[in-house]
Length: 260
Image (cartoon, rainbow, N blue to C red):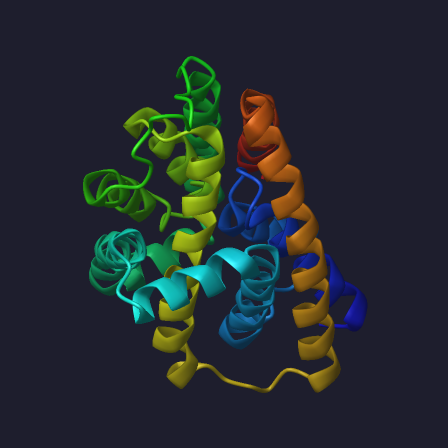
């Protein structure tokens, strides 16, 4: 892998980690269709940590307020913190039980394409969900947060968008558009940290340091832009537009399978 290829994968990761189009699916397709070699487990971790920095920067005030609230034992912060942990448990269990099986699916373009088609369908029907106002809305409750956490488990399959699934589920559970997006991104923090902690011990750091630096920086910058863009689309209720994109990419993957 050269610096240009590292940049391509970092851009793909940064954009698709937060836009509701599945980063795992796009990385798998990009590696195969564009003939860009995957950077291996270590590089994948670097890209995810780069996008995690984007979340911390974008939601810095919310994260600081949450930590302070937990320290001062504020009820709202304790509920949100407990809900984030509880919402992470299902995906952690799913990753532990299905880790090897999931890893094998990354090279299965047929499965990834079908999963992207599923993501597109979820996004399409999200347009029929009537979002609730933030006025007189209890916001994140333990029940709502756990439901979103359970939905996040589906996104361990390559091709299923984590942000798309969790945001749409949050809207269905009764969250406002802004709250659904905010909770989805906050929920990404323990999920990404947990995955990195699990895979880090077995990662091989044989890739050039310059590729590591490029991948981390590019994925962080692009990821921040992707979060800003998605929050804007969610507030405007324009998630359904991503459905057509997912379906198009899914068809491209299916055509590749047939052609090959």
